[in-house]
Amino acid sequence: MRFYTSSHISTKVNQRTISTSRSTMASRLSLFVLLVASCSVAMASDPSPLQDFCVAAPKNRVLVNGEVCKDPNLVRADDFFFRGLHVMGDTSNVVGSNVTIVTVAELPGLNTFGISMTRIDFAPWGINPPHTHPRATEMLTVLEGSIEVGFVTSNPENRLITKGLHKGDVFVFPQGLVHFQRNVGNGYAVAIAALSSQNPGAITIANAVFGSNVDINVDILAKAFQVEKNVVYQIQSKF
Ligand SMILES: *[C@@H]1O[C@H](CO)[C@@H](O)[C@H](O)[C@H]1NC(C)=O
Image (cartoon, rainbow, N blue to C red; front, side, top):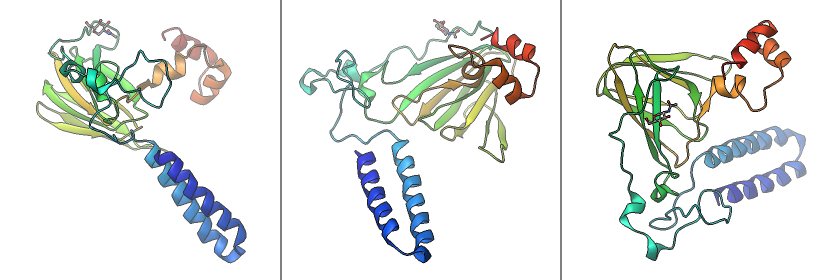
């Protein structure tokens, strides 16, 4: 809905820009750029609900941006309910962590509410490898243990913002930025994270770049990472 409103405004500004003299063109153009920029910001958030709730009915085959609503008369308390976040995920994998997600797919009542939750378990010295959430800001709190966290700002600074967290500490990872966590203790660590989307998405950098289906051409990755091709083949073989 917001998308259509914003693009309508942008088109009108664009038409006016064409019909004005060159002297005012630059200022009109920067206004246009500003509008386009704010338009993309609006599009990055989940749409606001227009009714009390819209419980997801994922079996319906109509394709919409989100999920179609279940008949409100058929909605039950269980549609707003998820059980099991007390259960520890299995961390016996190469990275030593496990993310249990509670998004609209697990909790249909989240549909249109722009929020979700995860539990992250860490084995001793386990990591949650560098990844991004394309649609959500993440707010993490440590329930048990000590965790080193960090995110990297976008180009050209690529500044690392990092901190050591202890039980009860809260840290926020800005939407879309590459971030990671590491358990810096000899015991297990647990964190809960809230995310500002019903469907935040997760892009693990290594899996996306070296484990895509099908592989990205080795010449591209060798040049991008400034390494020999066999280094690329070696990393690709692990993802
Ligand atoms: C995370 O834990 C669950 C529950 O133990 C398990 O089914 C799943 O395979 C684990 N995922 C990874 C990536 O180890």
